[in-house]
Length: 417
Image (cartoon, rainbow, N blue to C red; front, top):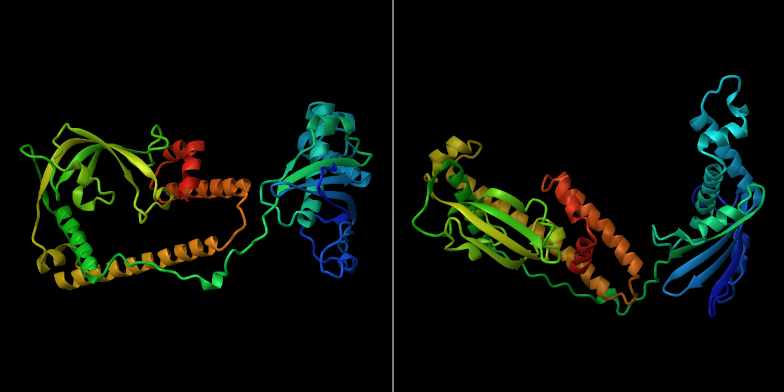
């Protein structure tokens, strides 16, 4: 393949079944005085037993093509290995024959015919060849981007285990890092959104939650929802980009909602709602939302208020603490502990913001374009990992997560990142 302007490298590569260990000094002699590699080079891997002919062609958009010629000896090894495996795993014990003496015709018959047998041998050869060649010739390959470019029916038709086999592999190459500005000069600025007063207010909110747990609820029918109330609601929150697939764990019927534990600021949109009333609105998940997969995403909230409650709360004092939280000496001791834990959580969040800011600033210093294949591959991997984390933490069921595994969901995630 001789595309105009293509950069071709011809080499003979002795393959290994695991990552290469030592490179023979002969390859170093092929470096020019300027330090750049010559267009034709021979790479010898010490103690290797198999030798391949490899033509490497650099294609546009960080793509690379490898034309690999597998020697006939390796094709024969693949044939022998496949027959051995099939005698053991497909045919099994056969009366009147030792396992290594089972007729080839019996193996071919048991596997489903000549075509299926040839395909199995070819697969063995291709897997071995790529395992030998790719670690040497594709060290900067984008993981998972490799694919056999040769037409498989043609490859099958031309395959003869006694002869050399030539096929083409393409892969995406990781771009070289180019710095647009020195990363040593970056300045990180992160604003601490809290202080001692906000920590104390958060602690008081937690105390109110403790009091609610031990208090009494009273049905309210003569007014609308107000701060501090509780309510039974039907809630459905879905991505604006894919309204048909609600977020895992955010599609609930007759769900008890406490306005004091409202992390999504739903209360502001629900004030004054009466039982039976429904409202819809758009909002953006906050950047400190506990499910980082959804941070910054625009969502649609559909809320219907079913029943409204107010609270009759006990007094927060030493007797209350002694009865319900005996590990603390007094009400003051519990309040102090809550303020401390809230401050610690805020500092941990601040550290996480600093780490994110460093990554963002360093990324801004890199001028290398991100290949679309790399962006999609890494995005899909992280998207799936974050959805799996929701299941493992009990935030969502596997059925909920499967609804999010759509192309629209992936694109929304990549755009938000």
